Length: 131
Image (cartoon, rainbow, N blue to C red; front, top):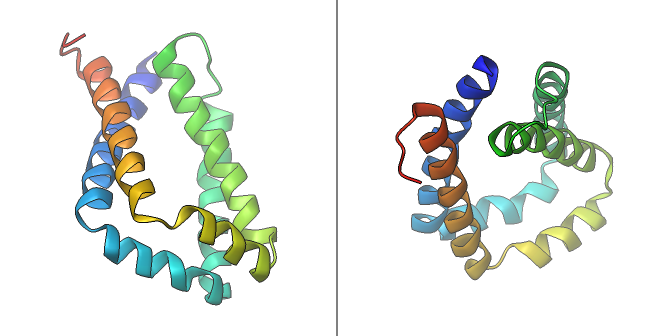
């Protein structure tokens, strides 16, 4: 449970911060995401780092006993799977996938969902008792 609390704090702060940045600077993110398919080396290196981090989380925290623990575990699995996608999909497939998700409204909704999940994890990990 101590590891779940620590990781909930880290992911909670990260999710709130990134959610706000995604909403406020969505044009900046859209530009970055549009250039991502052309940057093969960057895509591969990001994939390696994400895969190592995801596998680390899976091995250290594959706990589904509660909702907060399950969310942290899910983030680890999602990180590892997304990394495999980055490293293995063709440039054409990455461009097609990015074309589907790189829309301003998705950044707003994604940012809001990220903020809400972050607030939930912060509430749990710091024992704020908001809900």
